[in-house]
Image 1 (cartoon, rainbow, N blue to C red):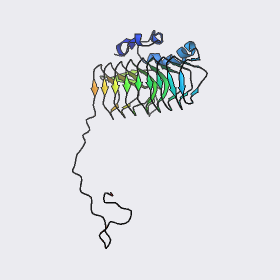
Image 2: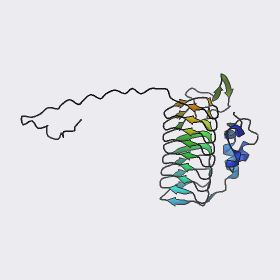
Image 3: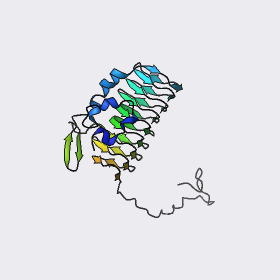
Image 4: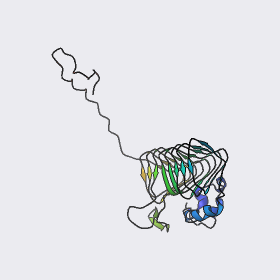
Length: 246
């Protein structure tokens, strides 16, 4: 499940050449900077709404809207009809496909987004590849660096595969959905059509069609009625406190 074609529809990117010769999907990240450097042809065909900073080595396709406060450092290649929303921060070596949404306050670095990828808002995505029509809910973070030094290891069914990368976040397959505030730890592989529920901290490989749920239970209790507050001689509540004060 780790070959590029196992996870991604390569017809849904203009940059399928990046995957040539890659035995594993993450191998494409090793050549991402060189690929962008060789293929970026700076041009801005977008529309800005407000004031944005766009570096010199950036291409943006027609129909794309870049909102106020966006910073695109480059090098970067951004496709057609995208929305790059308020205060998004696109750092070095970013490819965004067509019809993508990069929501407010999202940060991208060393990333490839296939067509129609949606990052809702408040997302960090580093050293990762997100497939066609994949979606990250609000607050999802993709962690790309281990706490302890060393190369990132992919774990599946007890087997450990050394990726050769010191920084590697996730491969998110086509149409995968990740719920709000979930964390994908370094070396995550999500197969096609997978679901990761909100607040889950996921590590390892999730096969196509799989669902990762958080089993933590929520306890429901009856709320105690509020204690009556002190009253003055007239029986009125103290000054500044209404009858609904808590």
